[in-house]
Length: 138
Image (cartoon, rainbow, N blue to C red; front, side, top):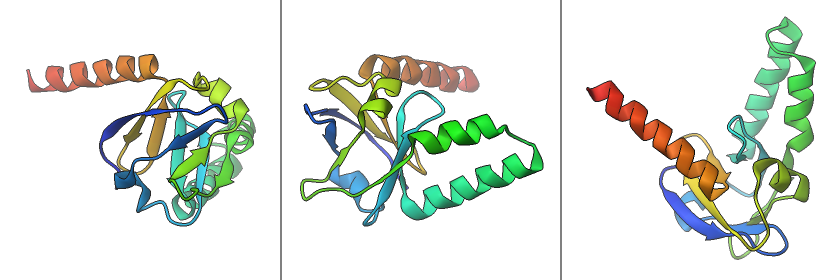
């Protein structure tokens, strides 16, 4: 499971160092893909592959469109962490998520996967989530 939030810097090659606390469960390979909330998702290979199979099954049943499957698979890439714990986010995926070279990014654990956000977008999502929590307790 993945928890916590960390501010990091994207380098000029599109690499970001994942926090050590989040790296252990990723394994030798992981997948990067465009997430439902316009961020970059990072998922262990086994978990991602299971999710991809489930999505393909939903397409066959007619529960989701082939367009969604195509969009999902078109942004996915299998990567390895380098010796410094960095992953490279390809340019297309960075553009979709609004991540700029040599700019800060927010890296957070989201229980079953890791998310990489543009800081302003993350703050808006965080504020909405906190308001929902506060409203639920009122």
